[in-house]
Length: 253
Ligand SMILES: C[S@@+](CC[C@H](N)C(=O)[O-])C[C@H]1O[C@@H](n2cnc3c(N)ncnc32)[C@H](O)[C@@H]1O
Image 1 (cartoon, rainbow, N blue to C red):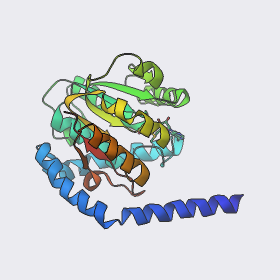
Image 2 (cartoon, helix red, strand yellow):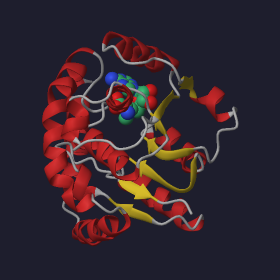
Image 3 (spheres, rainbow, N blue to C red):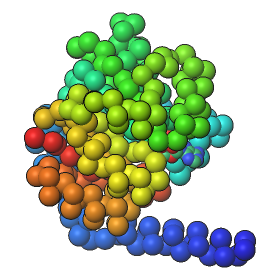
């Protein structure tokens, strides 16, 4: 049994590495990096800002992975930085993070620092001009939602606007968010909820789809986005992590 588990894990890792080397995906990542920078002014300075944000969150990520989540499930430091830089550059009024956890903390900390008139994260982002965004966090797993609540409370950020997905989905929230992260549940749930989650964004909003390194999920997601006429670009250049995970970004019209 143990041997079979080890062989399976080795095979998954080998397939991941192979997919990561795909020349077609690398070419798309390069082309889409420019397209993303054209769509989101300021993104050309990403590396400089992200370096500061990465350093700030690295100890939180390590602590979270050691005590609360698992590195395979927790958002990478790269994804945290990408979300925060996108927030800085697009100044959303409302953000929803689906798949609660470390992302919920990072976004709520941003909001808390802005409300307090500044702090280390706001400094790392190079300041903040507008009002603090309101953060909503959602999970399809009630147990993880409660773990997130405990972690947020422990870290001294707000624990309001935390929702169980079926309740949230039934509450008439389509089109209400400016920035959306889809990182919720196992991959079958992720794919099944994708179109509804993208629909949480207002027209002109930004949706980040994590875990697009998974080739089957990516193919289905891109097909869904194309069918819905939603432009979707690779953010591999900004989000690839040591586990070869990366995100795409959709722009609902
Ligand atoms: C990719 S994780 C979401 C991670 C989240 N955005 C974060 O930054 O920590 C996707 C789902 O896995 C579940 N989850 C989170 N941590 C987990 C863990 N350590 N083990 C099992 N499931 C986990 C949650 O239900 C979540 O919706």
